Image (tube, rainbow, N blue to C red; front, side, top):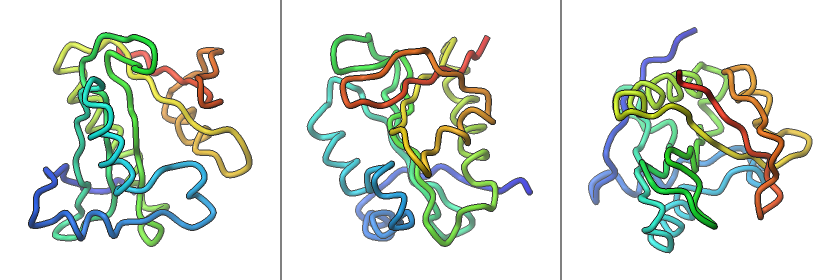
Length: 155
């Protein structure tokens, strides 16, 4: 199934509905909440955070956040780093994750990106298999938080 999604700017009008999107409790150790993502974006403006709510029709089903075209330096991955990707617990398994990545890849490619980097917490239930099926490969690097760093070649 190919999900139909829209990436929507987060505003005062939709913020509460977007913050209410939550992963399953067993996944919370692998991905921070939308609310925590907003806090991380405020605390690290040098990461040039770019984020959008993910909608299917009029319903928010997920959230995505990237570091957008930044110069990599300690604590900042880039130039394009998939900082957060989450799908609400009741919306998983419907193709939203792949649809979001398709949309993000098209956007960063159009901006001149040659690669997309992400990282994930290792362990049972990690999203790493999802990223690897999409085409991300481990770089061999473990970041300062103990997360496995993955790279998607956009060439």
